[in-house]
Amino acid sequence: MSMICRKTAEHYHWGDGCDGWHLVKSPNLSVIQERLPAGKAEVRHYHQKAEQFFFVLEGEATLEVNGEAITLTPQQGVHVPAGVAHQMKNLSQEDVVFLVTSTPPSHGDRVVADEAAD
Image 1 (tube, rainbow, N blue to C red):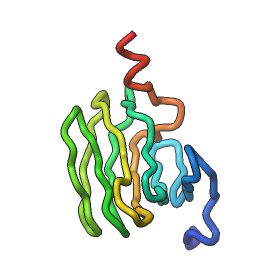
Image 2 (image 1 turned 180 degrees about the horizontal axis):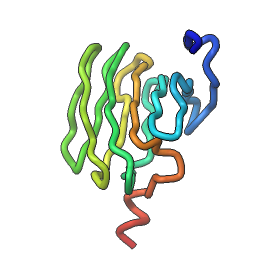
Image 3 (image 1 turned 180 degrees about the vertical axis):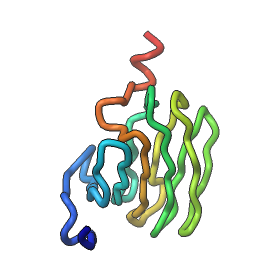
């Protein structure tokens, strides 16, 4: 086992200026720290198999879950079951830093919500 931190974690870019760091990347579990700049949002989507837990570390996020907007501040989180449409948004003027934990890992399991309606 080895210690992991954001400086040593695998980094990637997503969306428009967003960042992610893989803190845990195993066949059964994914833990990612993400940074969502002010005014940015992820695409509304759901996962067929993965359930997720979003936990805010810094800033104020809006997590839309099945049409309901939930405001999250530091040390608050929301569980999103598999099959439930959701979208993380940053409506504030500051970056949002949060953890997203997925089991099983959600990569390759995402369905864009608008495409599913077609």
